[in-house]
Image (cartoon, rainbow, N blue to C red; front, side, top):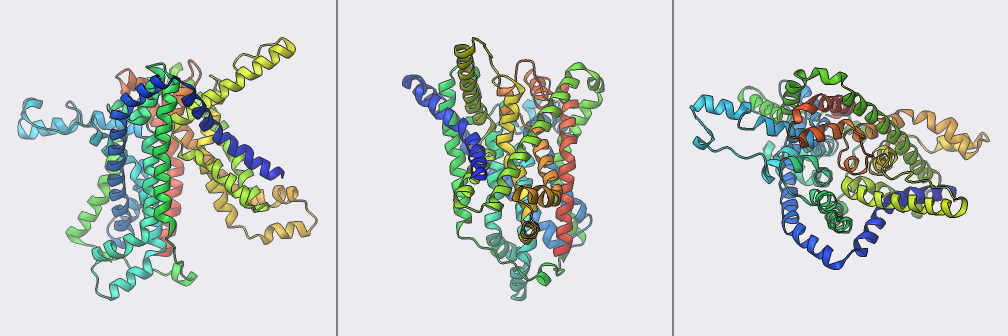
Length: 543
């Protein structure tokens, strides 16, 4: 019962912001909410759906094609590109937006080179696509989010594609025909999962959309609350955004519903499958096709931010940067601890008490990652305000003591929001490690007279240390990059590295936040490198 109560508390923590949104949205004036929904949805909903379609097309195409190139072919620097294709995950979308806007601006290097080559005198002499548009935002987001599709597709191509591809080749099918008619259908569920993750990150974005002038539902929630001073209207728009998220989840699950994988024998899994050897112009085209996504998603942001940071190295010693760095480390550290502990409760409870009720509660608790940070922030702020007001009223009535705001408007609110959002990351890492431990480990400990808690503390936790550390690092990194929830929940005067960069961009000078932006990228590189190295090991072992 204690384990089920732990699962209930985690599930309640996730559901609390959503319940608060419902209460506020339906408690507002009907005419006010109808007017806000009418004006917001008429523009924001079509724009959001169009952006989602373009990102799905762009990130899906880049991710799937890149995975096929590095898995099925051999060419110079293949192993290097297999690693490098994951690097754009280290670039938050808002940083990519700032970098792309600078790189493709009229005064930037691309248009400058065009004018120099063709002798154009001004922008009136030639046409150049505007990055500050919905298609431009889709290009930016696809450039940094395609690795979600790349990782999921590549894993399936490695583990599932060998036997079916070999069978097709023996029947005389050409390589691209094998890819189109055999490997793509096999990988469809994995592709859908990767695209769903990319689209959820698109819905969570607020910095890139705002900077590029794209009015999405997420930005409408933010603007309705802060600019129009309508909390009920913001809650109503947030519920519409939540419906879009639920539709994405339902579509992804429907695609995977009737799909099953076949796992070969151990000897087959570790057999060396032949890659198609590429040479000459074909090798050059393969290298170019995988170099372009890396250059766009990682190279351009690193180049632009690095160039700006070199001119502002003195910012490293500024009080503003030092404060943002300290706040970031403290918030991310506290979130990593809280999310990892909650994930441990979920996974260990599911292992020790395998009940249907607990599994369902665990699924609810893991929904936080699918909730955009803006929705989570509004719902959580309302719930925390209600808690603070209730506590203050109770203590005033009983003891004549006023507590004021205990959680609302404090850094604790940011930690709670990030814990709800990222508990799924820690749970996934810990569950993966726990599934590798056979259940007879638990039975052996119990047979020696150990209680369930002693078995957990003395046996399972020591064996799970690598998985726990991995989960904590993933949560830490995503908290460092988090912007949308932090903007709305942070206390006055409290800045993190992400909000420091955002504020600089809001002032029209994103280069002032370049040092903080590079610090965010540097923090994110380590786990990205670890993931890429692990996947390269799997690649070499199974191909």
